[in-house]
Length: 464
Image 1 (cartoon, rainbow, N blue to C red):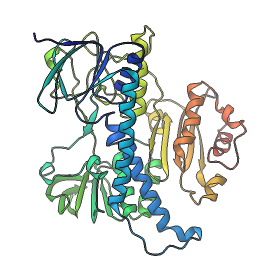
Image 2 (image 1 turned 180 degrees about the horizontal axis):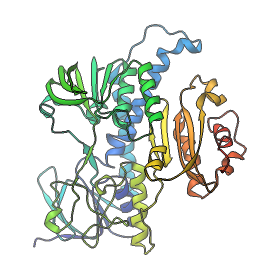
Image 3 (image 1 turned 180 degrees about the vertical axis):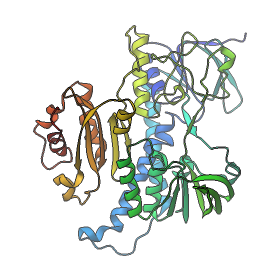
Image 4 (image 1 turned 45 degrees about the vertical axis):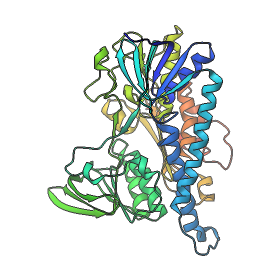
């Protein structure tokens, strides 16, 4: 076997979980290396969560300018310059990458740029851009390769060269008529943003509701929001084939309730799901198993089917959020240190960054009913929160599920301004085992959006 370099920790992919583990162990004096083929820091700071929120904020500013008369502000002629929107995003990304390089330097972890694949037990061969190779072996190896947008096997879809979120976040123009294939989180965020920049937008969703995994009242609220903003929504619609080229002209041949239709637009954005980046990296050659969907098989401690090899983040089938990849890092770090830590039963918060936001933690009503879990329901319209009236954003609601036999909070959903921040307060209470009465009886600052939690939890029905 050719010469290989030895490391205490070797990570394939530089997303949140892997890079944090490398920085942490390197700072303790361990020899750690992270192999990354393209995006330093993974997708979040480069092409996903942070760039999308940067662009979404720009779209919110455009919305404020467009509706400024409501606030007594008169504007003259104005227009959206997508090159400036793109350049603002790129400047932010450049700054984030610089921060990552500094963290590698300060921690002592080595960043190895190139494509990696397993060539032996806990051994990865890295091919750099210049064609040169290095062979690295880790005492501990972590797979952290993330996921990418899935392009379904619809006839003509790949040939139409559709955008994924990556290209949509780097546009230098406003699409004339954007077709969004998928009514999940990515599709909804980008549909609203590009509508606010000036595109005509149509969402095509195969399920009967937007965000179909959420409760019906959430889907209805999102549908009303998009209707009010002039976004056309076609649910229960299956695309059979695609013609044309995104960026010029595309035609979707679709079926709804047995009726065929043709949906035409200038641009096509695919936002119909994710697929793990686990192909072509030599997993099978070294006995690392994948499940039927291609995710690396892991146990509740994130160990793969091969001793000494772990997997974190999207590629391990963890919920596809950066904050969960961060928690995966904590799970692996603790187990390596001899502390038993499992992923079982962890609270998974989520936030959809539409305007207003949608945030949830714990059980939804749909999940509680499907599991046969009884609950007491409290619900409060955002219009009842005085802060919402001061900012003219009274759309949405807060709701909480409380156990029937105790005061434990089972779940919380917020659809309204600052929903993510409000949800975090409830999540902390849930994680700490506090009863809902702790929030009900707390003195909450007036006037804030979080103040609505007092009224919400005051509305919890008494135990029967």
